[in-house]
Image (tube, rainbow, N blue to C red; front, side, top):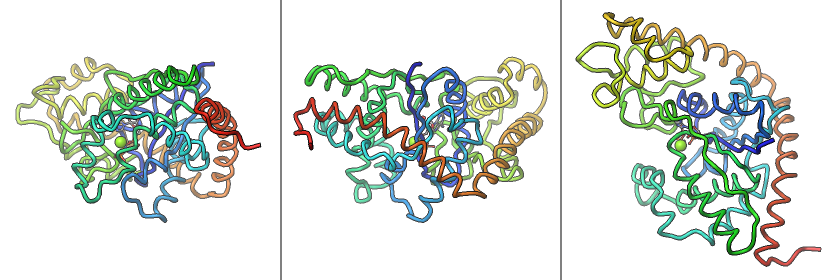
Length: 332
Ligand code: ATP
Ligand code: MG
């Protein structure tokens, strides 16, 4: 089976609809015929400041959301990144192969550091993409299903794999990003030209998987559209409506055209109401299952521990090979 790796940061107590559409839905399909590793990447989350008690809770909550959304921890390996020490170890080695200028060109770093200001920006945030490369390469992953925002990081991963292989001998599989073009970027409902994110300053335009249905419906009803009217897909001139149509189409498993037809001649109010129904139906069910899972944290922790053992068994083999090739003396 083809090896696959992906992950999400436990950077909030809930995932947002972009994580669901851009990543989770794709994961769920791919896990059936791939050897899949899905990580909750807490080492990545601390590249911006996290409250320790919340981070722990968010990590369990993220695991519960993976499972509730359909990731099966018996079929796929679903584990917490910090439980597998090899991530940090390989990342250090890859840091020494990464150019300073190369890392400086990463647009996510530029965006996030700009938001935080120079004083709050850490070396960890700068090195984030290198850690991500380590995550992917440790599992000899062939496929990395992510949203559009991660394309550049997967490219860097490919470059680092090829560089390591040419310098030290064939060690890593050079992975490929798997990005579903039309749905790979969901935008903020209040600011439909910027990516929806867990760490957005304002939550007004973020649809959380675990929000109460009432709250979600209200946010959708308040989503920014335009003065022109007309439920028509036009990314350039009607980014708000285009974003809502994308979300609707995925959540209802219907084509954009059939939605345009249904709402032809109707107002945005009707359209948003329809969308709110579809979203709250799916997320309502997921939310119920998440609450059940979080009711038994000991059982959840047990699943995560067993899965971390499986992940470590694979990762440790790759790490040992890489360290050997780099010339580290083996500990005997
Ligand atoms: P943060 O703001 O903390 O970076 P995030 O919402 O960007 O959080 P990540 O944990 O960074 O989420 O990314 C998890 C996965 O979700 C990645 O595969 C990423 O590409 C995908 N993703 C994140 N936001 C979106 C979005 N708006 N549209 C589509 N995919 C997304
Ligand atoms: Mg992100």
